[in-house]
Length: 318
Image 1 (tube, rainbow, N blue to C red):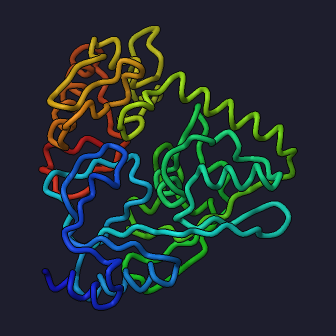
Image 2 (cartoon, one colour; image 1 turned 60 degrees about the horizontal axis):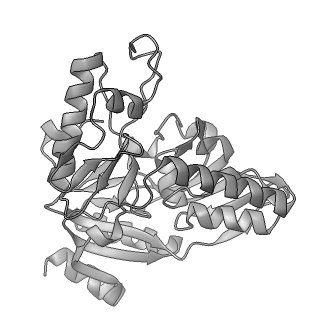
């Protein structure tokens, strides 16, 4: 057991696990172990864990609901932190605060049950609030940040906590400031309004039905693997939609496979685990998609997923 693992075991007991497998905790079901994995309950424990990691000079990696993540086969050194048992509370008449551990689906269910409108169309979104805010989740061209009023952030070393207005979060497509500051999302305040539960429930069901029709939900995946191209930056061929899935499809790669990793036949921007895949399989398949789309259309695909752990610099395509 490493000194880091021993320190976390002494502080948090059995909830701090050394060399803990991460593959079962991700939606892709691949990747190696964490040097230390901690399930932290509540903001106070998250801050305590950040401070303890900082005293040991250990890097901290956040793992939310395990979606939108590709863990290296070698695993992740340092602390892998998961936030658990999140709470939801109202803030005034038109907002509610959800802790990072709350799943986005759980947040939607809470809103529908309490007649709070605004988030019902996000039903079926994988992951939790922390990950959704960090990566600014998107669905049908809309961004989660459109509903965010403020975010509570902890400094990477746990030394400070701040409530940051949405305007200062540097939100963009698949982007927020925490991706370069290393800050940790503790909770977020969402704008909501009054709604009729049955009408909200119908919208939520419609979103779920759309996902079932258009996404390969029967196989492990990380969601969309690549960002959609930006028409203002990427010169798309005439008639080509601004869609990574369309580019991969028209490059003839639906069904392409490397080991256990495969381009979905349902949606070409979903790389799925068809059985026994490794992170290296997904890396090689992603590289094939990038190369073929570049050669065929002159467009450079950028990854939407987060690579966790140690990867050779040449493999990372953000």
